[in-house]
Length: 333
Image (cartoon, rainbow, N blue to C red; front, side, top):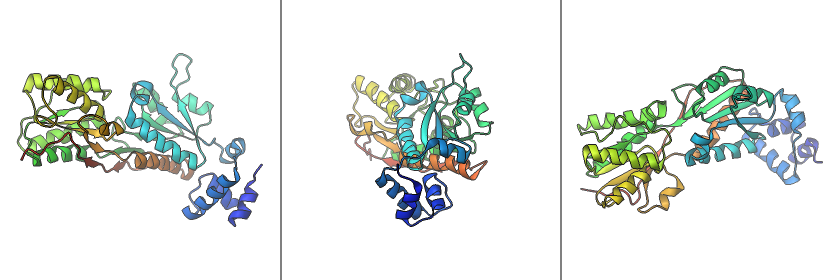
């Protein structure tokens, strides 16, 4: 079995430095940490999880709240979780998916304590707001992705700017009947995207193509399809559409094409997320690109900062987006 003493000798570092590198401490240089981890990997070093847990007074396990309905079926969340997992693995941590089993009384918090979890990333909370709040108010470090409300210790993309930028692009290319397919208006991210659209429409003195009674919570193709149907029924055919997700944009595209109209000849469409799916649909979908790798890595860094440096309240991290134009948008000028 390879020991940290052997790694220390080959890396020309002290045993203490090697231990810090292997355990993800941040008070050593990144160059040193990478050198130590590279040598450890080459030697096939396997850390003793029990020993690490005793030293840290916590396990090298990070919990993830990732509900099936809102998480595992969502390609956006899946992409971010993969980036988070890779970063955690490089820092010597394992991932544990947490459940909230009310039947046996094992909620998120009890599950974390039973497994001695060091910290938790809340990827998608589903309908368990009270269980999440108990977790947040506990001694366990928590970072939220796309939070339900605007809070510290969270990370999310700049939804307001993203939607305004997409609407502005359509406007600058000659579109005037710009529709919006909203997400969940009851949470912070969904409400922020809707506000971005309505503020732009008001700024340009345009008619809103937005069906207010609908609240889309799963950001699915089915919701995009049905919302597009209602928008056309109430307002007629728009010449441009911005959707709160790529899947909703694809659903809207399907309905428009079923009516016999062409995307983008009659209607231009922009989605949100820039999933790989955008490249395989016909026409290829324009989309607001979120940086999955950056969000996943940064979420892991924030969580480990709270765990290892005992940071209490980290300011929200807002990540920039980029508008990717493909075949689904036509210049009407």
